[in-house]
Length: 134
Image (cartoon, rainbow, N blue to C red; front, top):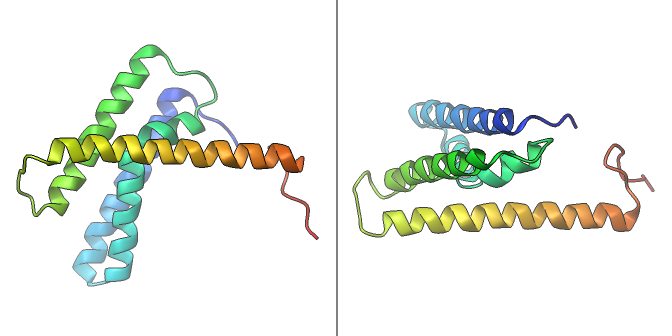
């Protein structure tokens, strides 16, 4: 898998978010609830998991400003998604829920990636090959 620069990785994950957002609008207008729900799931994963997903795709260690920009972007995108899910009304619990979603989703993605990396090393799979077929 080709790795991206830190800023390009953020742009790629944001592009996935934007595509899922457009898909959820189209699916909602077409009455395709299953596609709408799938798109909303991708919206939440790409918004709340943006820091972890971009870090996984980055080929080099990100510069210090990257962390702040990526974190703020994740909070803004996730906050918008939580606000929409709350009926487009502002509630006191929106900011803490947004922070919790970003932290939990990014931590879960990082933990899954770490577990997958450990499994690949344990099984002797290289990063450029597929697991052996039995």
